[in-house]
Each structure stands twice: as structure tokens, then as C-alpha cells.
Image 1 (cartoon, one colour):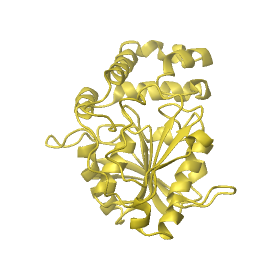
Image 2 (cartoon, one colour):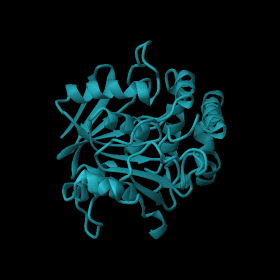
Image 3 (tube, one colour):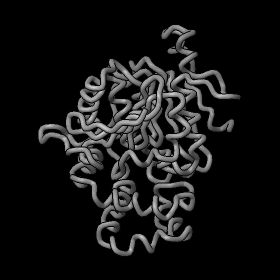
Image 4 (cartoon, helix red, strand yellow):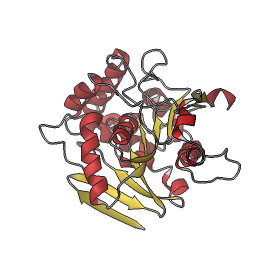
Amino acid sequence: MTAEAFVHGLSCERIGDGEPLVLMHGTGSTRFAWRPVIPLLAHHHELILVDLPGHGDSEPPPPAVAPNPIGYAPLLADLIDALGFDDVHLAGFSIGGWTSLELAKLGRARSVTAFGSAGLWNPRSPRSSELSLWLTRRGTRLFAPLVPYALGTSAGRTIFLSQQFGRPWRLSAEDATEAARTMAATKGFDEHLRATNRARFRDGGEIDVPVTIAFGDRERLLSKRGARRRDELPPHTRWLELPGCGHVPTWDDPALVARVILETTGASLPGARPSQADEFRGARRSDLRGRKTESEGDRR
């Protein structure tokens, strides 16, 4: 099944069959960032790919709504209602990961998989991250005519995209150019960046669904010291490090990204470890709160 819809000002696309899985992108991106992973997930889940407010084909949030994940979550909850679901599996990278966590606080999640999640900082985002995103946006607008040439070779993609991707040469020239043009075209980018940088994720300790937080070992936007705090997340959170991946891992290693999501949602894969969702079905919440947070990244 493939269908496109425009609901409550949000543009989304529905692909595949199975339990619903909403996929959300990061700052200055659109749902196309999930393109490499879609074929690996569509046989397990009905995928709902969303352009977040002010991104892609979606309208900006209403004036009274903060243009950051805290403001986005109620709008996404309305979308989930309109699609006929009480709750869904959620996966996202960057602000998409943070929005997934906010939706889990609202009771709308069956599971959460967040890659390079924004919002896990205190008290605000790292200045280096803010500057990098601002410069990327500025450069794509100022040098728009030159972008296809700069990104037309693997060397050019490596030079210009290494802040976002762990293996930027794996993007095709067309995909890299589309990503740059999308960043340049994002509506209300500056307002979104300011509102996002000044907020953070809070009060997630009572989330009682499976949660996986994964950072690439080539993550350059969000540092280990200042932007990966664990104290606002539930004790059962699974922490992973993804080899060879950057802030946007969907092109770096689509198979690994899909595997991490399917482990969290409970779908079975040959050779996969017992899914976190299965662990939840076989254990009481009180038992889970007594476990130590597990990190499997060092064992990969």
C-alpha cells in the first residue's frame, strides 16, 4: 500500500503493511531522508513518513506553537488521531528522535527508536552544533548554483557533508544535492533553530514503552560530553553506538538502521537478539526499573 495525504497541515506518505511506524527526520530535512531504509522496513510495518512542521511540504506550525519538538508533538498526535491510531511505533533522527520522545510522554508510542537524538543536552544545545547547522543552511542558500557541482563527486560530498553523514560518499550526487536544496528551502529555519536550541527534553523517566537511543561513532554534531544526557530518560533505555554512522545514519548503513528499529518494535530478523519489545511483554515494569541501563555499542 502506498498513499500520500495532507492532514492538519502535515504532509505524510503511507507505505507497506503491519503495525504502524511513524518515521521522522531532522532539522532542515524531509521524509526523503528515510529513502534508503524504506524497502527494509515496509515488509514489517505500515510506514508513515512525515514532513515535520515547516519542513518539506508541511505547513509551518501555528504562531502560538513553538517550532521545536515540544510544539511539534501535539500536532503529530493530532495526525495520529486522524489516521485512526491510538498509538504507533516511532522512529526519528535528530529532532525527529526528540519529537518521538515527546510523543511517548503523551502516551502515543508503542516504542521509540531515536538516532542522534536532539534535546539530550543541558541547559541548551552545543554552540558548535548550532553554528554548524546555521553555516550549512547559509552556504546552501548563498551558493545554490554551485551545489550540484560541489556535490557531484565523492570527494566533494566527503568535504561538504561530513558533519551530517559518517560516510557521505555513499550518497549519490542526486541525493546529496536534494538534501542540500531541502535544507535551503526549509520554511522558518532560523526560528526553528532558535526555539530548538533553547529547549531540551525533560521528564521522560516515566515512559513505559521500549526506548532505544543510538548515536553513530562518527557523530560530529552532538558531543558525548554535553549532548547525550541520560537522566531524563527511563532506566530501561537501551543505548547503542553505531559503527561508521554519523548524525544522519540512514545512508551510512541502512541495514543497521533498519535492524535497530525492528529490534525495538519487536519485529523478528534472522540472527537478531530477542527484541526489546519481547522483553517488555515478558517482564513487569517494576522488574525493568531494577535493571541497569544496557549499552550494546561496545560489543558490536
